Length: 261
Image (cartoon, rainbow, N blue to C red; front, side):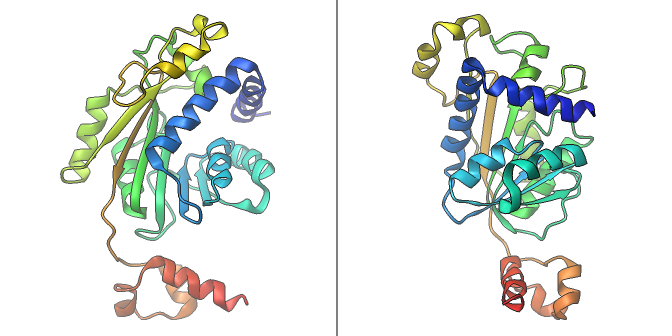
């Protein structure tokens, strides 16, 4: 059994505990507050790992896709979602999708471990046409040590990870986009030991612009522009290059769906 697979199984076991289920519910609520998922919208979860957030968006009646670098974790996600998600192996820095293909793109606990965070962010912006959401760990929260925060988000304790200050990440976004309109928040703001008896106190703490939570969420809109679709798709349907430059990627996808009828 690989470390990734073992970590996914241990995380699943933790989520079944009362504390684990509550803390993950807080993370999911923040994600929904900042992304406002709409039924039927196309959602890409970059670095989907075992598919927990894909399951969340699927529950909101979104059409979900996910990528990960681990075949083992993709296998766990397939077991969880079946045919309800399009799952592909891909690096965050090189996504196999057309420009503006998704309404929402999420990177949750991805930038901490990927090789080139700025390039991964640029790719997420490229394939989104509405919103990008980033979820990450806050090593300066009151929750506990960095190792405990890794356990909270399902990362192997021994895995290397970088930690971002919020303003550093926002500066990186600003280098890719002009004047991004950023909304932020965090949850899981209390020391870990308090959650066994004072979980209701966590729900009373405002999440918006709160810098203390162990799980930080950042969302910003992306300007929708029409660009080129992936070349392999164009080759299959013999779409002229000039037409592709003015056609939306989802239009090409629609052509593919009609040929299957």
